Image (cartoon, rainbow, N blue to C red; front, side):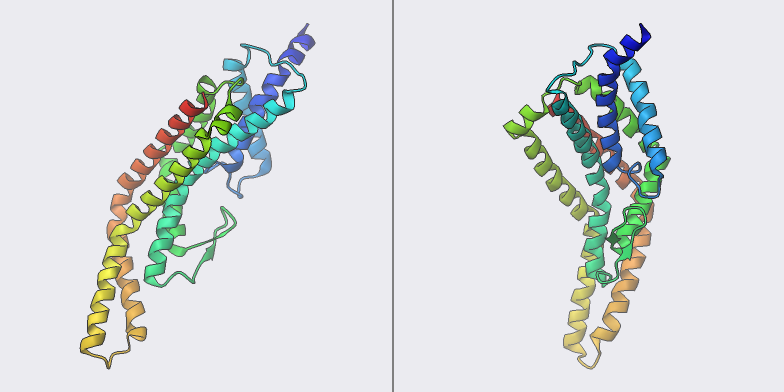
Length: 260
């Protein structure tokens, strides 16, 4: 009896596990390279069991020729949700790259042990700060809540492929990319404006006093001014990142509404 019950609902468990595991592959915090794979798999299994006990007992999914399609659909849903959340964490890295180009740090990228790729210095600093504030605000708990609540909006019998065919998913991704670059430019605008004024002042100095070697004194001045302005604005990053995380969860809700 119990074996028949397990075999009846095992396909549901596998589908839930595929969505949650693929979400953890690309989502911020949970996709870090420093986290052991055993931890990620164990957490995925634990969240799968919790989700299954709440929604997985409703309608058993039949195992037929379309079951592979169901698995691919759930993997795509998890990847899409995690990638949408991850895009808003790249805002701080893009903003840092904009500022690094103006300050002269563009050629001094460092290896980020979390993502395993080269990142700009200030972008890496802002990214670490964003992660710290996200954990302080219990954002990782909200991400877990989001993937568990996704089954209320996007059930196992969702129409993902229909939305992809209609172009709703591609439109959402393009608008999200546009929003991310706009937010990154907004975040870096104060520093870029200050450094632009420094460039203007150095240009006027070059015209009035051409004996000064601007290649020697210009870069240190821009670095000092940029770092001074950056650490002056650090106290306001809490409200800035809080608004950024709020926009991230709003975009996830919009994605749920598209996929339902």
